[in-house]
Length: 264
Image 1 (cartoon, rainbow, N blue to C red):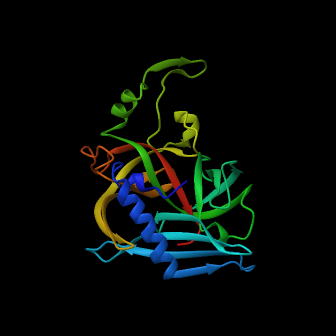
Image 2: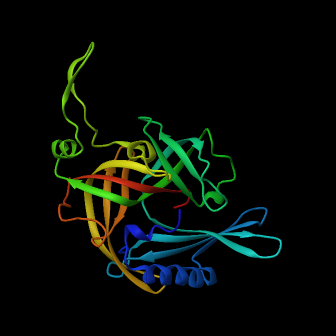
Image 3: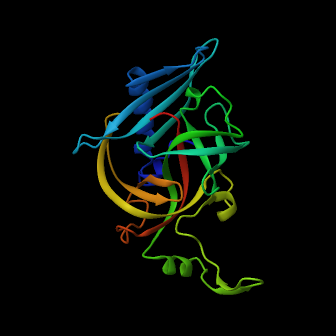
């Protein structure tokens, strides 16, 4: 996937998106906070951190991946991710066909509950081993493209057409509903063609930030969402999503791209 500007920059601000991407490539390939080079010297990862202008705390980073060709150095991927201290061990079940040199997509599941969902890797080349059918610790952050907010599970399930009781043989009457900690393959849940995840979680906290990314001042919110795999930071903008019901403990239902970063 390209840089997920649509989560935190208004859809109509195409000029800003173009300028931001150009400035990121120009500035952060010239000078980065951290540079990683693979042993065979064919892949380079350049990382630049950005801070909240007011608190001076680091909240995210830009990761640029370059491939060293025989005749040139080529930029193949640019990512923006949020920083988090929450590390989760996932089982990388299947590498998806949409994967490329630029990025890799996997169906993964958490070892505790086996919730299956889709992630996109960041800092992939810092991990030398094959990932498929192996366990790996990662840091997750989410970039939604569709998002709804509900006060409670009853409101959520009613809005989604669920909550009605049906008779299940051997069990009796039971309501069909979504869990407030649900994670799933977004392609199955929403009929979406691109790799993504369907996520339900509870907003434990949120804050408004103002950041400088490659000389561009951006304002957005970060929701710290309690999910089935722990607290996950989520990037949102008032310009793209209806956030008037956002409050502590509200339920968030969203389709999002989940970035799985191998390096804190």
